[in-house]
Length: 171
Image (cartoon, rainbow, N blue to C red; front, side):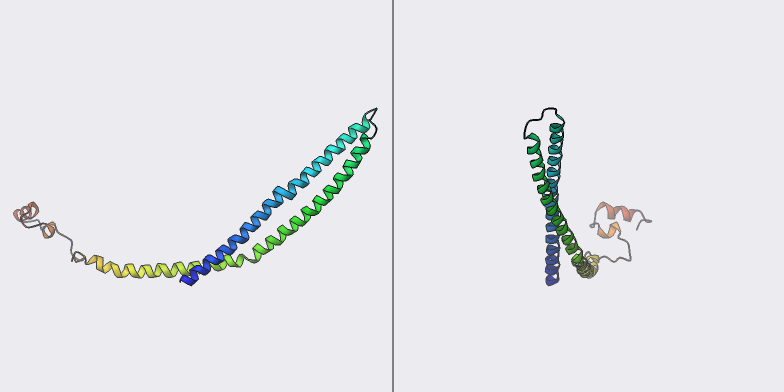
């Protein structure tokens, strides 16, 4: 049983490691790549608003629109890079998801082994209690077929024995 117990624990630890790695990857995707991508898109929107307001002005400063155009081009390049990182991150998440599904068999094996271990140990405990029951029943030398009477367990000369003798109908 000791070997089986350690195998169950080992398999559970492996499955836990897989799940924790999967959770970490999800967290990194949400907190890192996804947030960076959303910030880059927001920054692009800000540049485009500034460019629009600079073009609408009647007397735009020389070079302001050109500088904003340059920033927009740079930002587009950064967004394209972020999108590639995002796609790769999603690909990694998809592969990790497949890995978890491929290893779900571990969980089924563990549950099956635990059911066998628990059934066996409870069966053994049941046998022990079955062996103890007759010992407990006979501890005080009592016979389960007849009820205990106060006169039998009361010491000689106690009020219980005297009162029972003086009343003929009481056993």
